[in-house]
Image 1 (cartoon, rainbow, N blue to C red):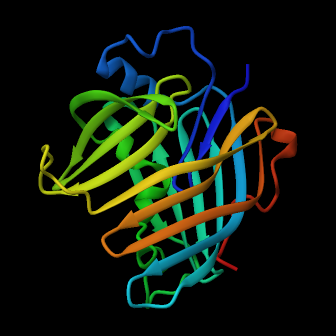
Image 2 (image 1 turned 45 degrees about the horizontal axis):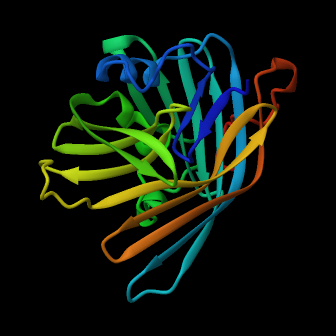
Length: 243
């Protein structure tokens, strides 16, 4: 049985196949499994392109590099855009004490927010929202023929509506809301995983589509590698600076 590694630009989650019925367990049990670390080192390295379109403006594009290394107690990722701006993102796994830190990389341009121009934030890139406080579970839905459980989570003044594939335990769609969430709330942005590639028994998300009012972004990773073997760990996986 293949392992499943989610490298969603923003996210890397590796989970082995489980002998539990993900369709029947409680909301909290499901979220606990989604959030849990695994007991072996896994890494992924991806590069590609971000294309962005906004009403009234010309199409813009940038190169993007994503690297992630999972250890039993933490995940460390790097995202670099156009070799100009980068972030190191660390996610610790310690139950209620789990936390996310985002640090600009050495050499990053400080006069602009390249990720923000594409509708992204650094803290999205490790799916830190899966650790937000549980509000409720909504009725289940089907996305591209996949059965999904749907959760509302919150942090501060933000909410997310998170649709998670029941079979393989990975997010299919995420929607963000400001200040409140109810049946009349309108998302100010959304993200969908639409293309996947298998590398060394690990599944990587290689296309993402993001949308918001008047704009849309597509992320395509065209060069990918991943493994759970230390001997294949690339020397340049995590970089000292953006260049």
